[in-house]
Amino acid sequence: MTSLAFAAALLQFPWPQWVWLAGVSIATAVTRFIVEPQGWPIGLAAPPKRALLELALGIILAACVIGACDLALQAAGAMRHTFRGAFPWVELAGVFIPAAFHEELAFRGYVFQRLRFWNRGAAYAFSALVFALMHFNNRGLTLLALGNIALAGILLALAYERYERLWFPIGIHLAWNLLSGPVLGYPVSGFIARATVFTATASGNAWMTGGVFGIEGSVLITVAEIAAIALLGYHPRRKPKESST
Image (tube, rainbow, N blue to C red):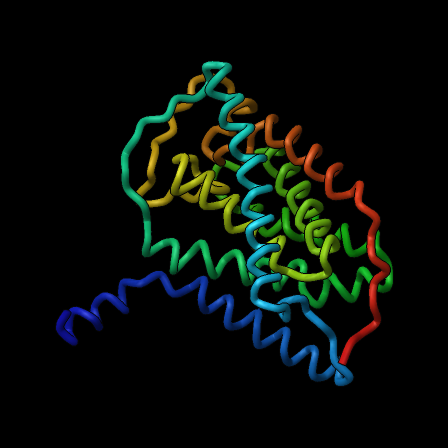
């Protein structure tokens, strides 16, 4: 690749999500330095094997939720997939990976963790409501989809609580978006990937299939999320820590 072609590729790369990740990371670091000079463990520091394990557990959980709903839609005759054999590698690097990291840092990072120390209910309200409102202008949003996004905020908050680290929710978030969008061919909260492994052709009511918003707007996701919340909520919670040096 010539230097001119490389420069053109850099200009065409979708940088905004990386800009958001940089901004959220800087804001988190500055806030911790000013408000928590004694230190506050955000939840990214972990032995590599442990981080990979929690990331893998998140991927498995997301695969179970999305996979179960997709199979149910196919069994009901409301969804049909056609193999396409493509994958948006550029969007994986430029959109899906940085988005999973910066959204978890923003919504399950320092603010959520500090609220959780003060008041667990307020922390969960922040995780659910603000996370849902962030998707308010997304294409095809319905009240059912908005409720499902709020449930996802609760699910991801519970995922943080499970290990008091962000790798588990990051794994859920990343795999959730990748499986529903680039793999199965659904819109991801209204976002349509340029290339997908399968295409998704819906036939039926939007409340069942998710419509334009994607599978996250389906009532089946509501049921699956409640089941996953019950599963994670069953485990005893750790008492929030004030700080750690």
